[in-house]
Amino acid sequence: MGLAAACGSSDPAGDDAGGSPVTITFWGWAKGTEDVVKAFNASHNDVRVAFEQIPSGNAGGYAKISNAVKAGNAPDVYNVEYGALPDFVSQGAVQDITALVPDTLKAKYLPQSVELTTLGERTWALPLDAAPQAFFYRKDLFAEAGITAPPKTWAEYRTAAEKLKATSPKTRIGTFFPDDPGVLEAMAWQNGARWFGTSGDTWTVDLDGPETKQVTDFWQRLVSDDLVHSQASFSQQWTASLQKGETAGYVGAAWGGGVLKSTLADTPDAKGKWAVAPVPTWDGKPASGMLGGSTFAVSKDSKKAKAAVEFATWATTTPEGIQARIASGTSSMFPASPDLVPVAKAAFDTGFYGGQDIYTVFIDAAKSVKQGWHWGPAMGTTNSSMKDAFGKLGAGGTIQSAVDASQQATLAEMNNRGLKVAR
Image 1 (cartoon, helix red, strand yellow):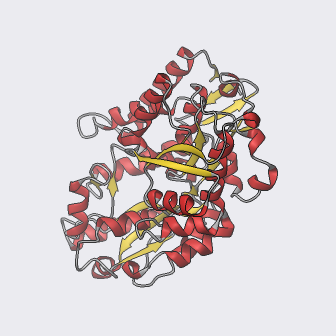
Image 2: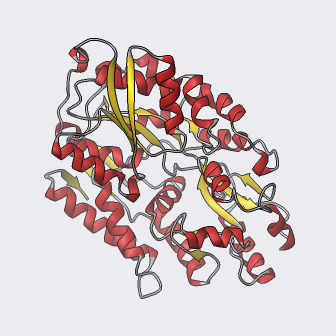
Image 3: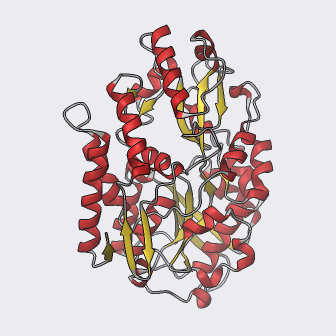
């Protein structure tokens, strides 16, 4: 792949010299991360981790990492979402760790996660979590509107949206997040779209295929007909609408269970009213994309790749690593290692969801994540251009026109980087 060739590969086998313990630096933002680092340091003598909390990727974390790489003072290891990994690889910010990741280790992860961390047949990161889609909803508000079951299809989702609005004019079934293209991308993925692909050293780009247009048309109608809110993700406006019962549903991912629980922790009457269901599909059959999901990547200039991979392996494949993260009470992460799902399930307090076994929903969703999706090498441009165009919704812009603008911006950026692109 062209993006892999842009970086070459490294041989980390001789690093970590200089005695024990080896201290590595780690930057991350995911909930529960500090607890993971504390647990690792308490149980290891050969490697010590110095942790720094940074903003999430979309909130400035990626810019901080990129600037640090350029300045030559990047951490040894940092969290990168699947969608951003090819961009970091293509810009030479990530170290090839193939020599440190045997097949026995890769076999511990979901195939879909391994697929997203393997570029040009080389391994560039270790997967932390999978992020299968899920639908969170208010049971009481659905019942008041005469909705007897969560929607199984997107057609039923629209019908439920109409019932909710008719019952309570201020209430909407969900929210379109104009600041987060990842939600649209996950729904396109679910519908079988393939935005990026490769043939030899040439990229293919197809953001505006029919599978994507079906999604954009559907959500455009929801927005135009005022059946969903349009609010920034996780904003005060969104939180307030949840607290007041003006938002009755949330199309999210497995990690959203912890986010919703934390967001409404100080809302006395929220506990027990929310439930989790499979995300609606077009034909009612199980299907999912991924909305987010993170990896551990080693910085290109790190001389401690072996120690960094040791830490990342422990954090992603051991019961102790997952237990430490979930027990923080703020994370409902779905481990990329299927063997550890029971550990996460046992550690997550489901009281907020009335004791519902929400991880069973996530398990089934993870099985239905479609393989074959690839992220592009310039997702920073892809997402920023789409986000900018989403800002014109209601002022002449549409969701589809935002996707079209992103397609053109992505192609231009890839050409600027000297990447071969077939259209």
